[in-house]
Length: 161
View (cartoon, rainbow, N blue to C red):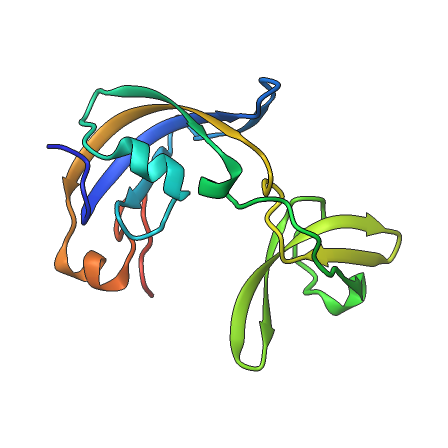
């Protein structure tokens, strides 16, 4: 079965930057599972996976414009560590969900300066050319519920409580 919209894809990957430094990799015991065509992964990788099938391997180069976007000047937010939940990850690159006026949005820890945490709305990989080495482990039809919710349910995916 080919990778196409509304199909659940299971894959393993290694992500590097242009210098060859490893930035991320899937856990061998928990491969990445996503719903294709629903913006669950960066657009450039999703586009290059289109039409691939189980067993296919791919080296994909994704420019910033098709990844996490170009690096931009953005306003950072400086807050006391004490204003974050006690279990919140507080290290550079950590992702947090903030709420403002009833809207939820992601922010990332840019740096920690003593008791102050500097947050940015810009993904840490903005402006980075992404180099993926990917192996397609499985492709299946998505359920109607997965399509309606826009993400995978069940093993390797997301369950609703």
